[in-house]
Length: 149
Image (cartoon, rainbow, N blue to C red; front, side, top):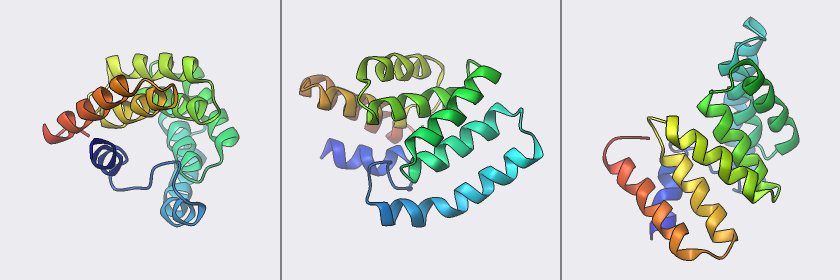
């Protein structure tokens, strides 16, 4: 139950990055176009680079997404969206230790931590640490119920 509720809330109604390809494509086409438009206005915007990274992440294009997250972090090392996105990509690619470090760093700065708790829960689940996974999922649900996203 905790995983299902956290999964539904962590991405603000959008599909999580590990959804089926058809779902990812349908959900992220508009986000991809909007992010590319933002980046066209200002290529030095950390926010625009992070948005494009997230759109590509939702499409399952992890390598491309990683490049935009890294660009965003070079521009602004404290960009929470880019830290979370890069951490998510690294987790999907199997670098769980680096992913956990980035997500924990983002969590310290994030006013809206639901996605971060969800991603950390997935990391712990992959590591077989189910108690920590459930704790992260429950914490994400608690934050969501408090009105945080």
